[in-house]
Length: 336
Image 1 (spheres, rainbow, N blue to C red):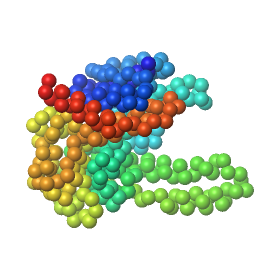
Image 2 (spheres, rainbow, N blue to C red):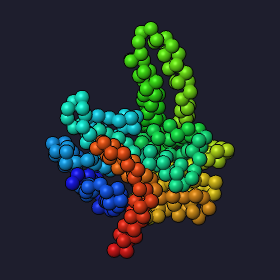
Image 3 (cartoon, rainbow, N blue to C red):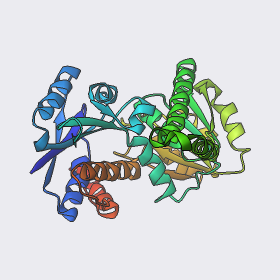
Image 4 (cartoon, helix red, strand yellow):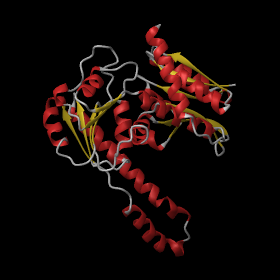
């Protein structure tokens, strides 16, 4: 049996074991998922290194706060999503035939989970959307990366430190732009010299057809009213994503004034343990509002698909069953 699990602190509230176990059972995977609390970074590093010493026994780890940056740092190989967002919530142990050894690979599925949920189960059109993204931590940066490739029109980041958030967003777009260009020119390496001029023309055409990156800027929360005034003048979808941990404690006040919420706004709060004040306030004004459970299921499904691919098995994670298992576990926890 292969082991997998969640590293972080606090994690006792996590629904991940329920939804992962449901998926493993339906897919017939002989895997076991458990929680591995890590009180400090030394404990986190020791757990990762111990698994690296027995990679054939471990399929991988999910990583939550506060160790996503550490997971990125420790990983031997960085995948696209992690390279751009500079953090990781997934570590995968995969055999590298060139190195003749298993290596740890970092991925970031948080933002892809947000985008996948919004486009899929939530039914929201992201192309041409105007997005307000609250936060500048690892989850927010992962979401910023995924939104940047989802053809949204604009992203405004609201942060307590707007200057730092602007630097982060600028650097993220630079990394993404460089990566997209390198991906276009990779084919040049295998083209004979006599054909390189033609391939160069083809490469330039491929690059010119890439979807444009959105405009991104960061503002402080004190500019929230001005930001939303502009958002509501937008003709496409208008989306608010709270990617901060605010709301994890019941009774937390929303990160933005609830007076700014309107019915034409779609709201996603990444907190999933209970209905936050932001979600309740959004429902009260008639806006579409979603907690983080759908995002959690989608990022977990992507994680399972990554882990299965690393073991030479292509699967489609059973998202409906995973959602049902997570909802059942959430109800049991509330009534316990």
